[in-house]
Each structure stands twice: as structure tokens, then as C-alpha cells.
Amino acid sequence: MQPRPTLPRFRDLLRHPVGEEARRLLAENWASLSTSMQVPQQMFGRQGNGCGATIGAMPRCDFACRGCYLNADANRVPAEPVEAIKAQIRRLRPMLGHAGNLQLTDGEVTLRPVEELIELLRYAQSLDLIPMVMTHGDSFRRRPGLLERLMVEGGLVEVSIHVDTTQRGRQGERWRAARTEGDLNDLREELATMIRDARRTTGLPLRAATTMTVTRDNITGVADVVQWVARHSDAFRLISFQPIAQVGRTEDGYGGGVDVDALWDEVASGLGIIGGAARMRELGVWFGHESCNRMVNGVVVQRSGGPARFYALRDTTDSMDVRVVDGFFRRFGGISFRLDDKRARRMRAAAVMLAAPGFVLRSLPPYAAHWLRRVGEGRALRGIWRIATGTTATPIVLVSHHFMNRDELETPHGQERLAHCVFHVSVDGELMSMCEVNALGVREQYYASLALRSNVDAPGGHGQSHAGGD
Image 1: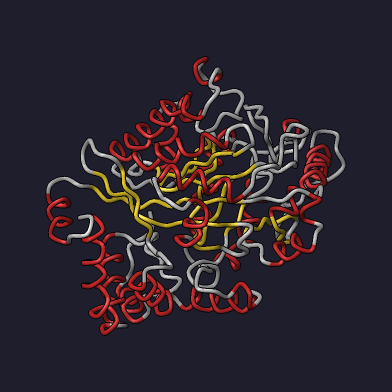
Image 2 (image 1 turned 45 degrees about the vertical axis):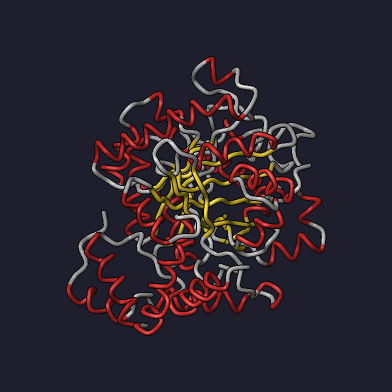
């Protein structure tokens, strides 16, 4: 947990609900975009500053999935020492900023000794980053109490669990025999229950996401998964769809072939939205290049026993949405409550009112009425009644991440995407796009170097391994 803010910190928070570092990074990142990317749908440089990931934290996995971005030698490569991963985190910190998103990944990181994983979590938090553990989730199933220990001792507040039919190696014959994404929904239910139980038993927050590799074989299951996540958005508040690229040890011919519009057509179908991908584009935003990262933020409204209904946060065809949401980002882009305790959250919310009372008073009441009419299907009073009689409203984010293979990356369009990359890895002290790491042999070269350094460090070797990063 973050330490309680001091009185001077509270005074600064009241004066500046968005920190100076966040404002500076947003301005720099916005300026780095080409003019064609500087549009209202662009969130990079308006609300966020990108994402970072570790490499070598645990370059091995106990699954053998059909699509995998590790290389063929990964399971024979030793993990980087803790201090080397810390150096990577330090290198990423200036790019990510306060409350920046850090993925602890590269293989199945829960296979690393738990004490070391806890140390990495705590170190990232000491730099005011928010580390997310990326996992297939089976370690938590096989080792009861592991998730809770990471929460209590490691301060873990974000986890992402990957579930889909491309995976091979999950515990349980039923899941190994699954042929459709719907066949895995009971497994997703088990994991959702695990998340709810961990929150309840520890009394601590845990924000959970789930990810799905999308192929030509399972794209028709996307709608079913979206429906499931909408019904269970209290557990999983983000789902990321990742069309498979032909990189790493992905089966030959398995990557590619998933059209972005076909994917979002399925997402729209799962949400019951008419208009398919074109309508989802009206509801969505970008993060970096539109061809790389698309997302739709919204709320799922659900009555007990009734269907889950999705409402987007920002609809480009709705003038009220555009005026209020864009107006908020112009004034408070970069604001984050994720590292705040309850008292700090209240103070930051009050600071928003103090900083722009006219905007808040002019916008909040009509916007609230706008949402009540949505919940009440056109009538605000009916919306109030539904909320008062048990209707729940939970936030949800739907995302697609599109990684490139070598051929795509080397095209002019691929180079344009690369120039607008928002997802970076620190490789020997240099920040590189994840697509470069995946597609250009960087990971293979890094693993070879890591194996060599480990061999040199072994008994009878001839030197000491460097800590990497810095």
C-alpha cells in the first residue's frame, strides 16, 4: 500500500489535481505525434503516457500454446537476476511517469520464486509505478493462497489472466479438451470467483483484466466471451483481444489473417450493438496509432437476473458526451486516482471542483441526467428507480492490441506504426518497441546474451553478469 500522504502533499494535491510530471509528459507525447494522430479520439498525450514491460523476468512457461511470442529456446534460458529487472524498471520509469503502467511479463512470471516476485512488485511501487502481473492464472489455481500473498506482501493491485482455446497445458482435462471459447466460460467463472474471494479475504483492492489471443479459428467465439465479461465486469473490468502475429514460436501458418473490423464486428455483436465495427469506431478511442491499439470505455448496467447492457463513455455522435468528456480531458488529462487511498481520492476529486468550478457545475448535473436517461431507457426518473432497486453499474474497457510480424513492420505503414509505438521494453538499457522485440530477432539475441552471461557466471565461468538496464 502507498504511504499516507503528508499535509504538504495534500496541499499540493488540492492545488494540482494533475501532477506536474504528468502534465509535462503528456505535452511531450502529444507533440511527438504526427498531426494526423492529434485527434479527439487520441488518448496518448491526452490521458496516458504509454506502457512498459519487462523482459527476461521469467523467459519460460509451463504451457505450450499454439501462439507464443517467446522463442524456441525460451524454456532453456535462465531468468535475469532481480537487480537486472529493477534496472529495466528504472529505465522505463521516466517514460511511464507517476502511476505509469508496468507489465511484469516475458513468459510465466509466477514461476519465479515468490519472494523475488514480491520484491519486484514492491520496487516498482516504490517508484510510483503500478505493476501488473501477466499470467495464465493456473499458478493461482495450483497454489492456493499465492494470489493473496502477492496482494498482502507484494501490494499487488493489478493482474491480467490469459484464457483462450489456443492454450495448451492447463490443469483439468475439461479445459484441455475445450474446442470453443464458450467451453471455457466455466473456467473464467472459476477465476472470477477466485478474484472476488481474494478481495474479500484480504480486504484489499484488486483490479483484474483478462486477455484472449484471437485467431481465424476462434474469432467467432469473441462475441460469447464479450457477453461473459459484460456479465462478470465486477471481477474482470478489462478485456484485451490480441490477434495472433506470426512471430516467436507461434505455429507456422497460425499467425495473421484476423481483420480488425471482423474482430470489432464480433465485439459489437457480443455487446448487442447494431452497426458492427463502424459503430464501435464511433464509440472508441486510440492509444498511439489507430492500427495498433483501439479501446472502448464504458459502463455495464445490469439488473439482478436481467441482461447486461453496455453504454459507452464517449460517443462521437452524442454532443453531450463529446462536450463533457473532451472538456474534462482538456482540463484534467493525466489525472489518476489509482495510487490514492480513500482520503487522497476525496481530496483529488475536491481539487477538480476547485480548479474548474464553472465547468463542473455546468457539466456534472446535465451529464448525470444524461446517464440516468440511458439507464432508464429514455427516462431519468426510471433510471433513478432502477439504480435504487438493485441495478448495478460497473466500468468496463474493451481493447484490441495488434502486434506486427516482420513483413508488416517493414512496410511504410508498419514504420509509421512503429514511430507512434506506446508499448516499450528496456533491452540492455535501450527502449524498444514490443513489435521490434517480437519480430526482428531482438528477443532471440537477448536470450542468447542472457544464456551466455549466465554460463559465464556459473562455476568454472570467466566473469560476472552485468545488471543490465542502466
